[in-house]
Amino acid sequence: MSSEEFAAALQAQYARRAGPIGLTVEELDFEHFPVKNGYPGIPVKAWIRFPNCAELVDGEVFAWTAKAAEVTWKDGPVTYRTWVWSSAVTRREEMMNRNLGERTRGTNSSSN
View (cartoon, rainbow, N blue to C red):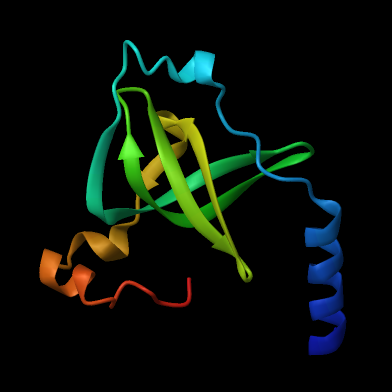
């Protein structure tokens, strides 16, 4: 498959796919599970649900509760943010060995 064909197939896949399915306000229950925020974001891999599939994405978490995390990730030029159950999120190992200074200087914007 040529790079043009691959790009066309990828674009068609994204055009067909609806937006991510996040948790509802009732599921999040912020009254009993308050939100905590952190910066810089925590690099993660997260399972994101879509109407017909689930996809493992590289993202960052800036907000979380005891049972859920708000994952931010890029899909091409578009940035998405959605809440998922904490069990759908794991820290990315390649970032675990970097110190805070390295992460805040923008070195975590690799091509993942």
